Length: 421
Ligand code: HAM
Image 1 (spheres, rainbow, N blue to C red):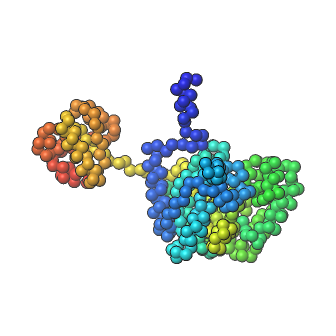
Image 2: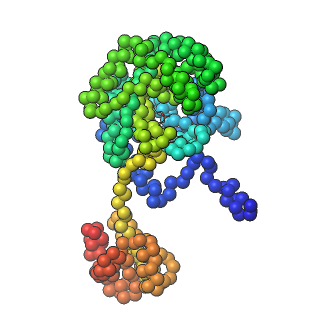
Image 3: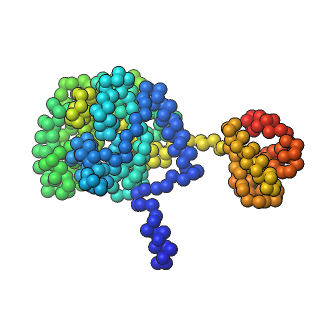
């Protein structure tokens, strides 16, 4: 390997991360803009939290027995000897921010959204990255299952605007602290009977948190777990009523869904509702988004006893299915002829830009023909010519590159023309 190749390899982007380049980034911007306008219609406001947090936040929040915490966190010790973690998800950060700033006392709707990178150390594959991006929304203080349905409907509204079709909505209830212990005990018993056939990881999970066996990706474990008791048979009256109401509200909103009693989701904090929107077009990583209710996290963080519900959408996965038409931006190429014209051109470009026109200025000295060649290469829509004559007369020539039509006039007239085309 040559030194150059070795250096390139050493400096390349880290496995599981990727650059989002111009050409693709416009789709990201369109998704982000649509997400913002959609969420704000439902009363959400943006809340931006740091990229790294105390490791304990995720251990306590995401849950000590979740795969995310046991295997996937980017944890490091900083120079002050503190254990920090690049956030693997956003939910614990929002809860922390509410407790820290006592946002619950402000009286504003506790509805927050955020878009940004998350970090998980898992084996990269199609639809699974180590740095990936989520659109996350969270609602606090609303116990009613109607709110769970409302956010599922909001997710559908956004996916609809993004042209994502052919999805399926899965829902379940994972019960609460009152009814889940009995279910966990039943699962533990079922797992003990099949212990020898389970992978070592699931054998461990059977002891620590048998619900997590449903997260296992090993085919044999999945087959065994499919025959385990269903949580639906263990729900207490309150959880059963909540789930029934969720189904009724989804029905009222015209959202078809399928009950999946194995949908326990990979995080420890869920209570009652869990849901995912999946697509068979995505392959193994089929969830476009997932979420649910978490009524205990805030009080477990030492804050007020306020319930929460929310979801996070994987931007990479959604974009792989989205139909977003990005309108081409119109640009003017400013061709100057000679040093003096370059100065005048600089000022003309400033003026055009201050009036909202995208303008490219090339600083190299070129003849007219070379300028047109360059403008063509840059896919400029118009060429604006600034030469000695133009400077003297205060009239400039503007050529439409698509039609070849050329007009000349004072800059105000040309601006009006650019604005209407
Ligand atoms: P999650 O299911 O872990 O939930 O992630 C949500 C979404 O993020 C997934 O459905 C998927 O689209 C995307 N995603 C997750 N991991 C990756 C990855 N490695 N590469 C690409 N995309 C990925 C949560 O994170 C919860 N915080 C959701 C939530 C909010 N629950 C309540 N509120």
